Length: 203
Ligand code: ADP
Ligand code: NI
Image 1 (cartoon, helix red, strand yellow):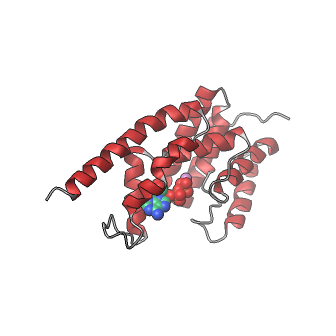
Image 2 (cartoon, protein in one colour):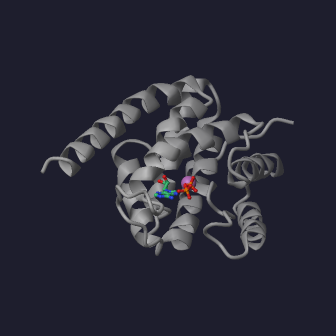
């Protein structure tokens, strides 16, 4: 059975739901992260010939039920499905959304099977790159009492995160649309790191 589209009105209700859930977050998972991922997922879907409204909804909802953010992720997801039904989203579409959330919020490294999971994982990963990715990295570092950098290599630092994860991300993307954007954001990070180390070693 084919899923239907999600209306503008339903998307607005989803946006309000997410606004209430993530309003207070300061670790890089705030409302604006959800909005960027929703918009990017919509953009990727449009360019990949998939249904943009479903991708957008999956983008808004992708971090609901993330165990890094919520104490009881299963309960959060159950509540979410009740909410989606309450705004008259049909069962097949709720299933698509559920699968994309499962797909991307599970153990890291798992590859999504379904197209909306792939699109949202790409959108989420793009938000970890570039100028915004740099800001999120240091926001995360600050929230977790992590140093910016240490040249004695005795502890985990935010700069290390670039080499351990962020510079490797562009190789892991699924869609061609996301790969093009990732190349540009990758360069922004390389330039940034070059400047960072120039300044670090300047005097
Ligand atoms: P999401 O759940 O949105 O995929 P993550 O929870 O993996 O994102 O990370 C949130 C943000 O924090 C990302 O921008 C990521 O790069 C950054 N981050 C994750 N782990 C670290 C770390 N050890 N040091 C610095 N930044 C990190
Ligand atoms: Ni996310």
